[in-house]
Length: 367
Image (cartoon, rainbow, N blue to C red; front, side, top):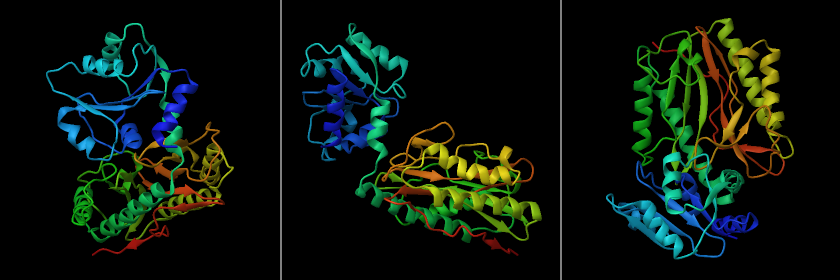
């Protein structure tokens, strides 16, 4: 059963007349066509017993047809009312669609009003976000292969980043150089903005790469990834410049112990919450619990952050094919930050990482 057919079966089960899929990532997953429409309207319309269609800006129509999508693609010009055109094409398939499924996590209020204006008697109350998340949750062998390839290039990015470490060189220059090396190999997009943080700056988990210089006797955190054939990689490593003090060394050792323990525990049958607790217990027992301030991990696939969250309160039981990060961190303001991360996929009896750069502490003695 194809992905579209699985969604159609859900529509039948939920007694829905139509589905309006608006998230470009969901559209890409279901159709093979991925494009960011920016401010324009793009949607996938799916029906339980009628042919689905793609609706895109006019300038994307030919690209959509070229992806192998075998159903109709309709476009609109900038001066046209997209919702009126969508309504015309919908009614050619379903005369009076009343019960609609939408992605509540994506569809804006303004665009929902546009749809309601064309279908005033319809109900747009069924959220299909969980359905699509579940479809994307278990990766196929082909998806795993693409994630492995993306992971290989993330390892390359780390290697290039390490080569570019120099005293006085800014975090931004290190990040720019490693991205340039990647692009020379034809990999043009990173999964997210490359993060390089030196010293106490790394204690800000989402602090942006800056002009902060690389200095001796500190830790440098790398968090990076790239997109290969539509699938993402995501990896973090922390390395030493010069000699570390006892506190810096201890933070690293504890974080590494937590990451290795969680990666060893990741297997079918354990819950997301239990896996989070494995790493959190290690860090808490070492006295750093208050400095581990985020979930253990997030899903990975066509998006660098997707369902599921590996965190307290999530009772999801892990199954083969699920893919997510394992990334404990310790962030002590004004002192240092350490994060060590591999993304993995659950196998029949454990897990396998997509990245393979050593996690033993690398020390660089820079002149």
